[in-house]
Amino acid sequence: MKKYATLLLILTPHLQLLAQVIDLSKAASERKIEAVEYDGSYYVLPYNATKEMRAGLVGQEITIAKLSSSVKDKNGRNVLYKEKEIEGKVWVIKQFINDEFDGKFLIEGNGEQWIVELGITTDDWYINKGLENFKSKFIGKKYNAFIIGLEVESIDQSKIQLDGKTPITVKDIQYAKTSYTKYSIVLFFDNGLITQYDPTDIFQPKEDGWIIIGKYESDLLVEESILNKYIAANPRFIKQMREGNVEVGMTEHQTRLSWGMPQRTLYIPGYDKVNDYGYKKLYFKKNILQLIK
Image (cartoon, rainbow, N blue to C red):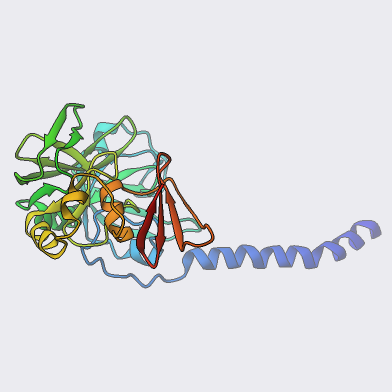
C-alpha cells in the first residue's frame, strides 16, 4: 500500500497537468467565435479561411457537388447516407459548430438537417450568392484571344481556333465537374467553346479583364475594350507580341504575354535576370530585354 501511495503522489502533479491540458483543449473548442460577415466576394472558401470566416456563412445557401466527409444527424450521431440525398442540392447553413479542427456546419434543406465538415480540399461545394455575383461580373462580357490564331481545347477535347479579331461572348457560367476528381468554374462562350476557369490560379493576371482559361498560360483572353486600349498604348511591339514573338527592347511583362511563364529564372553576372524557356533564354537589364540567346 505504501508503494501505491508513493506512486500516486508522484503521478498526481502529472494527472493535474493532463486535466489542465484537456480543459484548455475543451475551452479552445468552446471559445466564442466572432463571425466575419460574408461579403459575397468569393464562391468557394479560400485556403486560408479562418473559423471566423466560416462562422460568417451562417444563413447562406450552398450547393454541395461532391461530399467526401462524414455526415452526422442534428444530434451528432453518425449516419449512413446516399449521395443523391445530399449532393447536387441546395442547403442553408444554420449553424457553425466550433471544434479543435476547422469546425462543422449544421445544414438544412429538403426537410432534413445534417452536420457536415465541408473541407476545402476534399469536398466540392460552393456558396450560391458568391457564384451569382461571379456570373453577373462575367456573363455578357466580350473577349478576344491575345495571341492571334490561338487554338484552345474545349472541355469535350475539341479544338477551337480564335483569330484574335472576332470577340467571343460569355453566355453562361456553371460550377461543374471538369475531370474525374475535380469541380471548377466552367465558362460557356457563344462560339461553342466550353472551358474551365480557375480564378484562384496563381498564374491568373492581376489586371481586370485579363483571364487565363483552359490548361495553359498562353490561353489568354482579354476583355475587348481593355485589349483595344492596350493595343493603342503599346504600338511599338503589339504586333510581335500578338504573334507570339519577342524582340529586344520589350519589357519582361511584354515577353511573358508572348511566351508565358519561363521554366526557371537565372541570375547571371552582367544581367539583372535571365528567364530560361528551355529553347531560348531572355536576358534583362532594368526590366528591358537586352539579349535573346
